Amino acid sequence: MSEDGPGVVPEDKSFGSNNSVRQSTGHREFRAKRDGKSTRIRRLLFVELLGGLGDVLISLQAIQALARSHPEARLTVLTFPPGGELLERDPLIHDVVQAPSPGPDHPHRAREAVEEMLVRGEWDLVVSDTSYDGINGLIRASGVPRVVSNLWQGPPPDERVGERFLRILLSEGLISPREISPPRLHLATEERSAAASKLPDQRARRPLAFLLPDAGMEVKRWPEENWGALGRALTDHYGANVIVPAGSDLEQASRVARLIGERARVWPRGTLRELAAALSHADLAVGADTGPARIAGTLGVPTVMLFGPSWHGRYGQPPPHANLQGHHGCPQRIVSDFTQQPCWYAGTCTLEDPPWRTCMEDISVEDALTAAAPFLEARGDPYDADRRAYLHGGTP
Image (cartoon, rainbow, N blue to C red):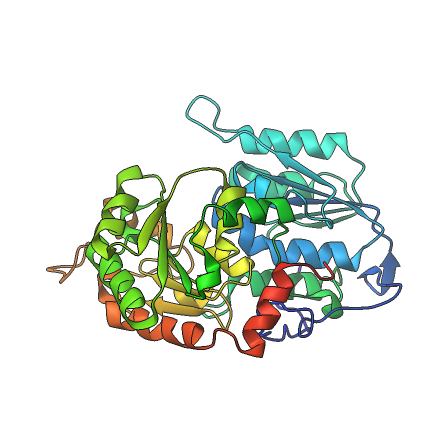
């Protein structure tokens, strides 16, 4: 398998409106190609078992491009909960199979789930972003006619992972360039309506900002006082209503909301689809490199992501979203795998005499406000109208 494909993935600067994304029309005759020969794909399995909510969303653009490139194929996605629930209602995905997560007593659950799926289906194509526990070798040895066993292979430091996935699939002749569109989450009208009933009355025309302070790892957390200051600035400068969703630390959201003041309220913890439905009404989302911020971006919500241990050039969202990086020149940064950095396991910066607990603190409130300002100032222009139209429908 080649590392670099001949196709260039264009950078789409839209939020995914029907007027701007690349869509094909009419009957599509694209066939998978290998060694100059065309192959019809009838049954397609995508394996996404990296374990993070963000990983599911990073893969979504590739999943949907595969589905559009092979409209006659039945597409199954194997992934972990709770991320799998975000793929529900996607008209391009026929089956979502949620594998049990590995644990100390059952460390090979992911591999076993892949084994079961390989035996269960007569697949024409298996694509995977997962290689641990010998899963990539298992897929290669499966006898499936076409396999791509490691979409994570060798991305350069400043190529976004999702774009790398597309480049590999293009080079393998498995997707058509015209079927590449911004990733999209599908929400039902009733889901959005239920969320709207619990949000501030939007008839007041005040911008609605979601601040997402929760992060699964301590080293990815921006200080609570910074969240409070950013929220106050958004209310003072733009008259924003601020929503702070509760995450793994149920009290954190309450503390941040109190720091912001009376224009802030907590969104109670619920399902991911309930959070996504609420986020779909936002004019702005600000969060660390975590799943909820990626949910917002995939919904077309203008998003500012804050990066510390992970590298924005690899994990950031494409324009027009904004990505802010703490401590660009960290000598301990391992762009290819930030989970191998000392800070990841220590939960704090391990540099000698660091000026911070985590390099997230290198991102100032002013930096975040400056990045957010253009999104709020653009409210009501045609660009914003396109984004909102996208949320209410359009061609998948």
